[in-house]
Length: 196
Image (cartoon, rainbow, N blue to C red; front, side):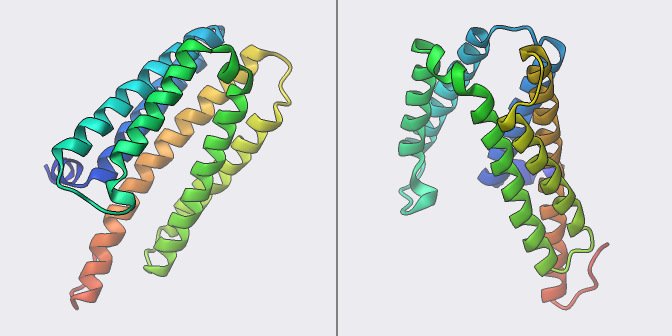
């Protein structure tokens, strides 16, 4: 029940869980059906981007005004819709660089996990190294996807699928670690005994 409350109230947690689920489903599809044409993959990515773009715009107009990064839902929604339309209307453009895009997404995920590992270490959370390990794995996988040393497109797609599953699992692990670290940090700050 506590996780449901956190999920419902914390928008960043909700966004991270939803993106992890998308990566998880996408990864399983690529691992089990790597022969899918890039046109189908682009169509799915395009529709997903448009859907999330519309949701962001809807949430933007339903919320009170926020200034700064937190209030950029309209701009982010429009960017997602534009990207989705590119994937749908000109699939050959993103398809030619799809492995590079996904590789850089993995590298970005690895860098975010590195930041998280640093934050957890500074908060003196004992399991901060788990995020550091996830960061290292994602960075290695991202570089491999960008370098593309694979013999066939099918092998590349399976590898990307595996990497996406790992990214999703590490995102969920990061959410759990960060939630526990925040709770522990608040307990220490208030003079209570922290939970391990």
